[in-house]
Amino acid sequence: MEQEATKSLMTENVEDCLLDKVYLRRQRVSKTVQELQKVIYRLTTDVSNQDVRFQAVPYSLAYDGNLKVLAPSQFLVTVPVRGLGGYREPREHRWRYYTLQGTRLPCPLRDPEGLQQWLAVRQFMKSLWQWHEADVNIEGDIVPAKVLQVFRKLVENAIETCHLSGKVSVLTNSTAVRVAVETSEGQVELELAPAVEIPNAWSKRARWPRCLTRWPSPERVECIKSFGFALLARSNYHWQLSFLQAEQVLLEQLDEDGGCRRKCFQAMRQMKEDVWCPGKRPVISSHHLQMVLFWTCEKYPHSKDWQVFSKGFLRLVRKLHKCASQRFLKHFFVPKSNLLQCASSGELDALAQKLACFLKDPQIGLP
Image 1 (cartoon, rainbow, N blue to C red):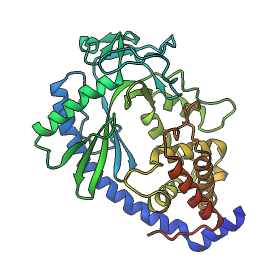
Image 2 (image 1 turned 180 degrees about the vertical axis):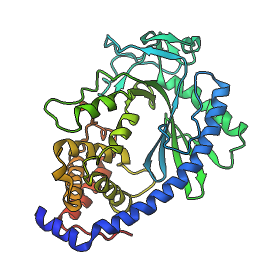
Image 3 (image 1 turned 90 degrees about the horizontal axis):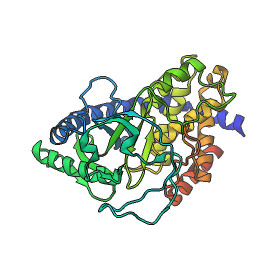
Image 4 (image 1 turned 120 degrees about the horizontal axis):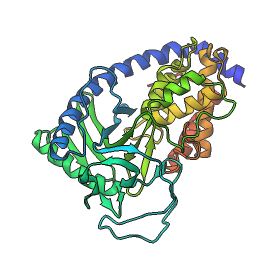
């Protein structure tokens, strides 16, 4: 079956077709990112002027480590916070849930999953007095729901102050702070997530690398771990572990051995966006696909495994099909997690069906 599918793909010259579309996508997304960076810089600069706890996201012509492309019309922006330094891992496991008014709720509502944790101000050796204020702090905990409540108001004020009301609007259908932005390529959605950045440290929850793995090399592992991690405010109760910079470094250094991992990933992403899972807020994002890529690279660590595009591409598609079918995808650094836990089961089933059909008879019929 694998040989027949590979032969079919090679016959149809899928590599050239898909990579042409990848090039056009890169041009469109790059143009959108440049426009967004200017908006993000203006908004976050004003937010920082209003509240010293939040930093401005600088405008950069080079790679922007604060902006993650989840889909061509969906982006995540991490907004660093200021005044929390000297992070220490929590030593206790005490379930703490509150209302926005500060009332303690019966515990536990639910246990935090692998990428979630609480955050107490005492976990930092240095902290601005503002982080002890009741607008973000309840009984010593820095509560993400309250941080987001404060941050949302600051963003709304910044839109008015920067005269961006005709271009930017705050979306009100989620706990996270999301804004719609008009660009020359159409309307896109930004999630602005306050981020506690913890450089030069590695979370104890991220038990990586795993024993007996050959990818990446030990030297590369140490380099990646040196970028540290972050804690993002994206939900009511828990801070979310994030490794966006470490993941980006791992992604950039994929093919130092001359393999075609990046091409295979880009082709899978193109098929996902155009055929398997199109739309403005797809159930599977580019971040999910990166996890599929990393797990597959770990399973197939050798250069020889990534010399033939069609074989590598189908290997990734099969892994994606397995994840969609089982509705289960582990984070590469924190395996005790399921990145699809909150995803629509109906949309995942529809995706799995499309992938199954493709694997039976690979086609390149992109729109």
